[in-house]
Length: 348
Ligand SMILES: *[C@@H]1O[C@H](CO)[C@@H](O)[C@H](O)[C@H]1NC(C)=O
Ligand SMILES: *[C@@H]1O[C@H](CO)[C@@H](O)[C@H](O)[C@H]1NC(C)=O
Ligand SMILES: *[C@@H]1O[C@H](CO)[C@@H](O)[C@H](O)[C@H]1NC(C)=O
Image (spheres, rainbow, N blue to C red):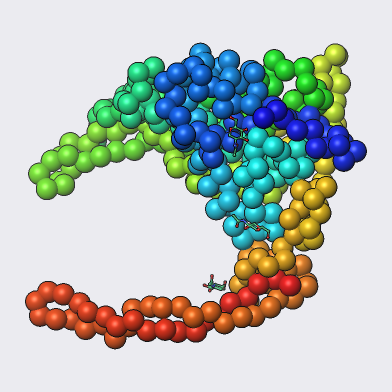
């Protein structure tokens, strides 16, 4: 399946962000093949990606895992928000919310980019892939209380191969607008920067009954969920940018205020997002009607904000739970099943 140019069809400013995160479709498709035959690379919709796939076939299961994790972490991070990251399900087709250079697409690009490198770096440490090894121990002398050991995540290798997959197809493609490529490459790099910053010293104790007489430490990456919440803070503070021509090179500069270069650690977007309150397929907004909400919360998952002032419907749901549990000597517990009615709320 080729990339669709839905933006053009609807006469919206399509940025041609097409080939860029198509590989996320591997979350749905990628486990159907064994990745032991170059023919398996036909699952990838773009020629550039299929070429990379054939060259690095043994890295593909890591990329499939990265796609799966990107989807899960994005949806979990935005579970209580009006925009809930459901459009990643549609890849390789890109819905407009991921195609127009919005704040949301900035987040998805950065997360996907860090996930690709994360997954490859971890695979190296697992010792289960033939193409790379444990990350090398830091050259700095260890603290007197521990020694370097174990097997670290191979961040340099993850960054190198990960960016070949996520940046490569954009760097070499001439499709789409140049400004959109500059934007995506920037946000990809922000994702990898947050990933690199998450590398920390992790330790394990040895010795009689956990006495920790010997401690070995290695450098490991935080979970993708942690990186996702870091990127969410950057998403909330993302900077709107405009094209900035420096010589003949297109770059990005923050809009409004004094002209300054974009910082390497800020997520960037070109167009404002809709409120995502009402359904508008042209903008990739699903609307929040029928979304479950929390009546008592004043936060983003609360009915007031999530339902955009439209109010909510209440219904009763019967739930079954364990009750009247009794302890029997010795040693088991029996419970009865009780039904309870709970009140649920969904946006109007
Ligand atoms: C799975 O791969 C095929 C190409 O072989 C493609 O047509 C289809 O859209 C993919 N499905 C998903 C959910 O990405
Ligand atoms: C996101 O919201 C849409 C629209 O209300 C809903 O159909 C979908 O199930 C939600 N997805 C997730 C993962 O919660
Ligand atoms: C709803 O929000 C309140 C207040 O933030 C919280 O204490 C409660 O656990 C939430 N309920 C559910 C079902 O998430």
